[in-house]
Amino acid sequence: MKIFLRLANETDESRLLEWRNDERIRSMFFQPEIVAHDVHSEWFRNTILTRKSLCFLGFEVPSFDSPGVGYCRFDPVGVRFFEVSILISPDKQGKGLAGLLLAEACSELKNFVATPVRLIAKVKEDNPRSVRLFESAGFTASEVDTESIKILEKNLI
Image (tube, rainbow, N blue to C red):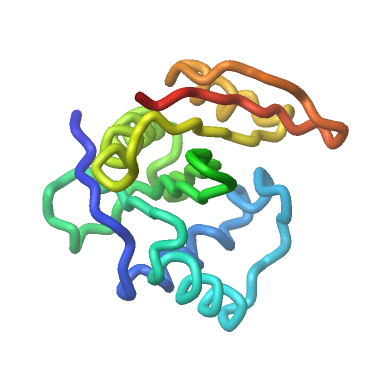
């Protein structure tokens, strides 16, 4: 199976909010509260549409009008450092798509930034599926902070 990517655009704002506010997904976030539409809208305009962060949406078919499987976002956190966030749509979870989406997005990132870069993923220790996802993609654990957050890192060359 292949995942097709495109950068998030203005048509994705409500889709990302819907996914973000799903109860199961929120339970794995560091800030699990429901996000209000106006707060999300401001974040989306200032972060995603300005390309401060690169947010790649994944699709199972090359038609980008389909519902999508989720997104992989890269937030700059320093010179040549990006924090990686991945979210799989509630109706697509458990189908093995996260690894494909992460691999495709990491590959696509190379078209937008000069490599090498360092990728960092922060995962709750009580989210073993995400820990395994990043480890299977070549990320290695670097530390666990005081809030039981596992930090995994990978060089992207």
